Length: 318
Image (cartoon, rainbow, N blue to C red):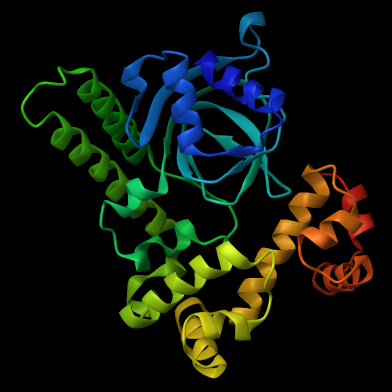
C-alpha cells in the first residue's frame, strides 16, 4: 500500500525517526485510510511491490526508523533487503522478519516482493496473557534480529490468519461478538507466530527459566530499557529492585545466561552504534547524551567492547 511509503516520507519531512504504533494509527485516522487495515492496537495488510514498475519505485525509502513497538513481516514471494542495527538481511520467500522494540531498521531495496505485514502495540501482545518466559526472545533487545524461514504450510497458515482478521474487521461493527471474534483471531495469530519463533530459537525453552527468575528478568529488562542511556551501574538497578547486587547477578544469569553488566553494556553499545550511524550528532554530543563524562570516556568504553574507536565505526559502512 502506497500510504505506508507516504507515512514514512511524512516522518522524514517531520524529522521524526521513531516509529510508534500510536503515531502510525493517528496518521491512518487523519488520512482516512481504509478502516479494514487496522483495528485499535494493530495494523495489517498484504502488499504486492514491483519496483520495476515506475509507479511503485522506490517503495522502501532508505531512511532509518527506530521501531518502538513490534511487528512481523512474512515474505510470500520475491525478496527484499534491509538493514537492522547495522547488519544487512535479505528476506526471501517464506521467511519471517520480526521487528522488535528498539531496533533501527532501514529498507535497502526490492525488485519484487509480496509481503503480509502486521504491526502492533506492545500492550496488544501483553493482553494475550502469554507468559513472559515465552516472550523473552521476542522482546529482548539483546538478541539479533529474528529472521527465519518457515515451511509452506506454516506460511499459508500465517497468511490465512491475517486474511481472516482482515475479513472480520470488515464485518458489521454492530454484529454480536464483533470485538471478541477479532481479538480471538489476533491472539490465535500471536500464538502461532510465537510457536514458530520458539521452534527457531531453541535456547529460549521455557523449562530452562524459573517463573520467579523470569519475573525478575522482566523487571530488570524494563528498568534497563528505560534507564540505560543514563545509568550503567548494576548497583543502580539492584537498588531499584530492592535486592543486593549479588542476588541480581545470580537471578539474571540464571534466567538469561548473561550477567546484568553484559546486558547493560550490550544495550549501551547498541545505542551508541545507532547514534553514530543514523544521527547527525557529534561524538561529543553522543557522549553527553549517553551520560559519559566526556568524549574520551566514551571512546575508551566503546573501543573496549568493539575493538574500534567511535570515529572509526562512524566512518565504516552501514
